[in-house]
Length: 144
Image 1 (cartoon, rainbow, N blue to C red):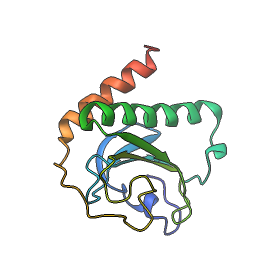
Image 2 (image 1 turned 90 degrees about the horizontal axis):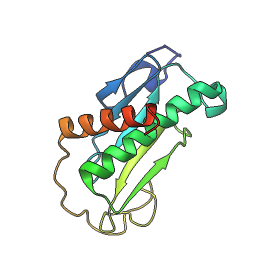
Image 3 (image 1 turned 135 degrees about the vertical axis):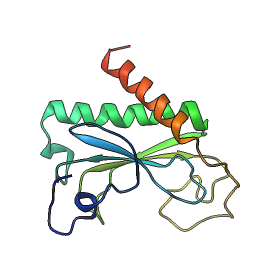
Image 4 (image 1 turned 90 degrees about the vertical axis):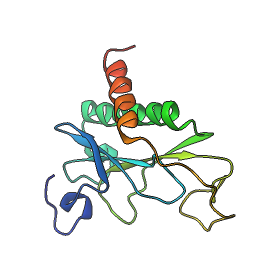
């Protein structure tokens, strides 16, 4: 990770490391009620997608799409949200969030006020998620 002052995503992974390469990493975020919630974090400090060149943008989105595919395969959510806000932490990262119709925020964003009690969800099998991600990434990179 590159260092940029006090940026929390330069100083720490931002979750439990599942995978990384020379450009970015996939981390699992501990968020009650949202098993499988991941972040794709760019290693080098950058605030916006347009701070990256075209090849790096494609790479980052390929990782985000592989994370989405893995979550769909392992968690079978009703929906997957992809979000890149960076308002609180202006370091380029994508949230990849599995959503269920009975989660505490659905259909609203997970950052808003809850609408109901959280539904019980089992923890995600990290190895299965990692394996599904690696398969999806390889398929994406091979044009399958």
